[in-house]
Length: 147
Image (cartoon, rainbow, N blue to C red; front, side, top):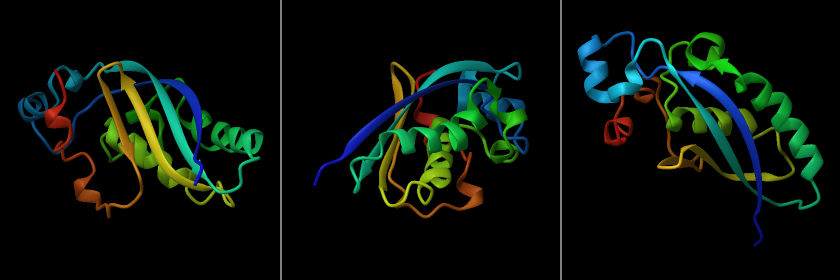
C-alpha cells in the first residue's frame, strides 16, 4: 500500500479554556495557553491519503475550500462555529479537520491527520476513537502539554 502525504499551512489564534471551569482550573490544566487574550500559531497540516493516487489538485481544492478557508487567519474560539463549545486544542483541531474531510475526499481515503502546532507539539488523528462531546476539551491530553 502507498500513502500520499499532502501538506498545508494556516495561521490562527485560540484560547485554551473551558467556560464551565474557573480561571484557576483552566490555568492549572492549560497553563499560559489559558490567557484570555489568546495566542497564535502557524499550524501545519499533513494529510495521509490512500487509494486513487492522481488526485493532488482536487484534494488541494477541497482542503482549501473546506478547511483553510474556515481556519486560516481566524480566532478559532470566536470565529469558527466548530469551536464555539469545544476547546480548540491541537487534538480537537485535528479531529475537526478529519471530520470535515474524511468523506469529502472520496474516492481517496483519509488515513490520518497530523497537525503540527509548534516545533515541540504535534498530534495525529486516525478517526478510530469514538468521541463524545464531554471529552472534547476535557484537557486530558492538554494537561500533559509543555507549559
